[in-house]
Length: 429
Image (cartoon, rainbow, N blue to C red):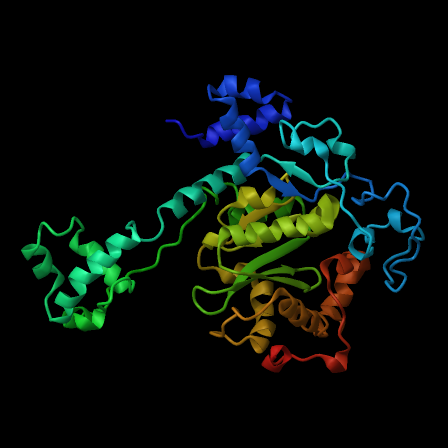
């Protein structure tokens, strides 16, 4: 086999961190150096990871910058000199990002770099998991669509469509013209069903009369062994040993079938809920949200907010290893699963979905929404007073437990009690 395997990519990542040269890696894997080089350059991923304890300033002028009070209108900024502020890069009109010149030379990534722990510039890492996923996506895309050229399709259309429109069946045409083509009957039916030919299903009366067969849709589990060590019993055992650990319940709210969905994260201790719009209800969409949260919160804040996450058995949550670990390697949370068909085991997130359904009724499409719309909706929901919180809002309770700084990082804003809207009109454009 000439293609790199999952094990090969895992060894490449390990050897890069061990500071092996591309030539040495190629010799160990018995591949050409150019193969290893192309693999790393094409599949490396960018990272916003910054050095711990250092200001994440990537401006090329940061060492000699003399700007002061650029964001004095922002209450969260208390720095006088802008180059020492984490908001500097986003508000300065003269910002020019400095790029690491080492990334233009072998090994083209930050794996194993001796200055990685003190570097604040944007980084690139070769990670075997995402690299292998990208490779598999290319394999799938290369097989997508009709395996036929445009000229062949036009020729097929000129031959088949007039005969079908005369009332002839696919089987009759194929049987009596065996030398005209090499396609199977099923392929022809599929081309017509996908509207690739001028003829349509309506031109074949028997096809229109037959009802489509009912078949239960199957969910694709990324990791079929994902529940091992992460069952609800394991969760209860973990909580018995760590009774003071905060728990976050995670779920997915569906809109129109097959369209956009909303990932929700509910904090049991304060009834605060985060929500993120996902283009599709997939495992990768959930992973992308986790990567985003880790990038804006950092390791310390992320682990403080999400020490334990309890979720259901949906296929979108079936890659726990990718959710539990950061792109740079360390474990950042623990994922556990409820028992099948047991939504009562995560009741707070299920109950809080009632507020979302007041604004986005069941069956409505989320395809027209943006993340800004979702954030607006959650600001209203999280500002709504709850009797169980002694008439405080989840926003106030979250601020008490975790502080205002994290709320600012998450983009949460309080809404005045008399201005709260929990109706579909809130998001009407």
